[in-house]
Length: 210
Image 1 (cartoon, one colour):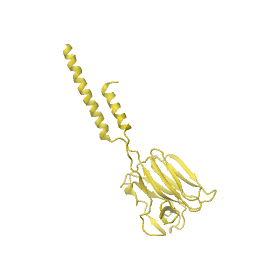
Image 2: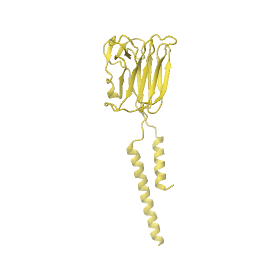
Image 3: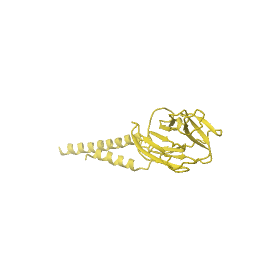
Image 4: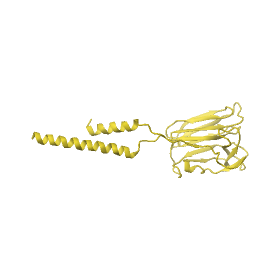
């Protein structure tokens, strides 16, 4: 392998081996003021990198004592008044502050349900940027259930409640950062300098032999 290419490979491997911290974002809906049922705007957390929607009449938050973090949790409803928690919640990850679609690597949230009986199944599905299904998780346990997805390239999560009504709380998501472009360019620059130096040395030796 030519020395410059060898140096580039070594430097890139070193960059990949360096631990890189990733900041997780958590949305728990608890800063929303008020009590009882309240309407929820799907772009409320767009600045944090996530948008919410539902195929139902609307999204709502409700104050309860059985949430993961008291008081609020989010649900979708077929009722304009939010009297039912029976519709899917769609979570789309976007570039913070924009509507531009993006993906994350890790997602988790809690299913909130005060009374789920046997046979009533809720479901959570993860999709990538091409809307390809990556993974599905389902359950029917009482109380709070932690749902986690660790796939690379998660763009959309769809939570579908059972017939007994559920919502979500404490949505957390994060991306594993890639090496900065500046470091990659630095590695290429170092390799070029090595090539330049060794090339000059070879030319000097060649001229001496002549």
